[in-house]
Image 1: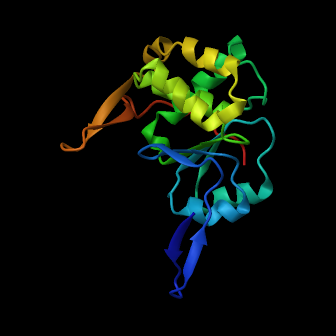
Image 2 (image 1 turned 60 degrees about the horizontal axis):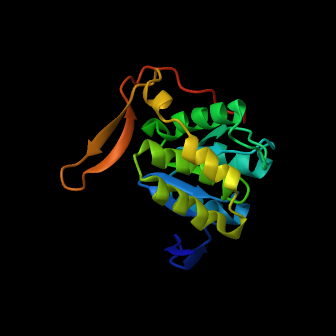
Length: 200
């Protein structure tokens, strides 16, 4: 929860979606946002949302996105899919390309619970960022809790980031500022066509 001051000077309690967390600067993760979470999401100044479920986005959520000029990228992964199959790997790779494009930031990643599908995508991002595997898997397990899936852990462990590094997007790290030295991800070629947006 977060408290903010409204225009009339009163305190308003902003409610974050369950499992909400900052992954890194301008990248967030959570469970499926409900209407009660919309005021909180407004404070993030989101530019896009990566939605990892096959179900249609609810009309209320679509209205919120449209009214705040937020792009929706939908990657329909079934809840108990073994991502190690080729279609699962391809889908995660496409979602990862959207995630690391700073033109889409600030971005929120979510599935239903913000645990398994979201955890897999964040885990693949961490591998791309050269995190040690132990830390990557620990982060997944921290959000998944007792419902951690061995198939997800295996998928993250074997996910090949080399093909992403060699793809046409030519992704590079760009350091912002001199003091913080925080790595930010950016495409070399800003004229490349953007991935397909989900229809609103």
